[in-house]
Length: 400
Image 1 (cartoon, rainbow, N blue to C red):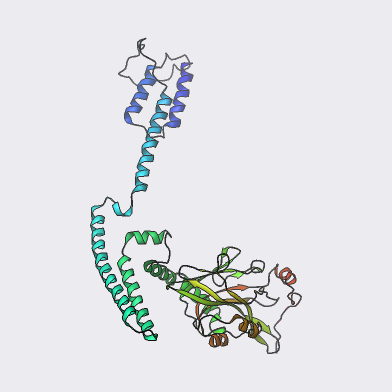
Image 2: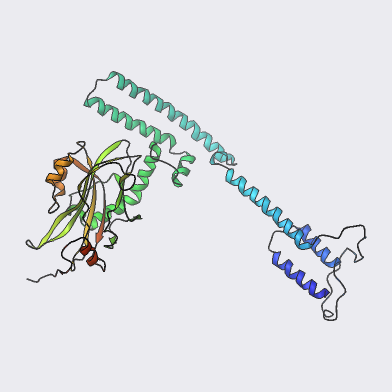
């Protein structure tokens, strides 16, 4: 029985041996193991005796309580260690960027603080100049130009004042910011131009959206396209079932102020059998869409009121056509609000000319996106559901 008890206790010790233990506690465990051992049985006669111990095997005095079980003592020690570990981690979480315990880091923060104080003095001086111009200069185009230039310089000074702030960088990296401050607009614009904008321009040029639809594009705003909640990368070939419902669109400008934009979806790959070529088709046109650096939702939940000139036409591609391109063009209305009723009476879907529309309505492209559709297993059902003819036809190249 003693051997069986010793075996069970050894197994228990091995199970919890991975938990942190102090040297004194391990020694105490070894002492108690030796003191509670009984005489070896016949089965354990061949087992070598344990190492000698300083504690005698004499019985404990009757007036002393029996020692607590070793397993409970180890568990208690483990719980105390876990509590200490939790307290240390909690303390680390409370530590902020401003009170990091590094002397060199604190000295660097003091240098950055002095530099920021100098920049703030320049900002205050520039703000006083702007107020003086507003009060003394006569109203007119010249005053507006001067104020825009001075405001641009003021924003640059604000960026320089916070560009080296560790807290600003931490907030931007973790997404804990809004575009109401110039420094965050600057950082967001720089990140967009380094990552997303080059990819967008590559797809637009590689797939000949430029110059097939417009001669050139210089995007200055980020356009986010979603179908059924999924963010779409520029140039992807999407299933016809996904594009059957209209998308949601976000436009993120990196300059302050509100703008009115027109959003158009144009397909330049509609077959023109008479001329053995392709022509344009307008799939969607929405004008007078308000956006700003604080309000990005152009179309979808949370979007402000706008004027739908042409309803969304489900994108379709017939058999034999490799794919069709669908370009999303975001055009700023430089002339102000457009007459929606007039546009509804003049704009037509077939052979839509984007360049002519921009020239007549004083629009300039500030953002773009695109996707592609091809014939797939869902296209026939999509065309039938939306009463679009041509699902039973197939295009083939005829040799001369």
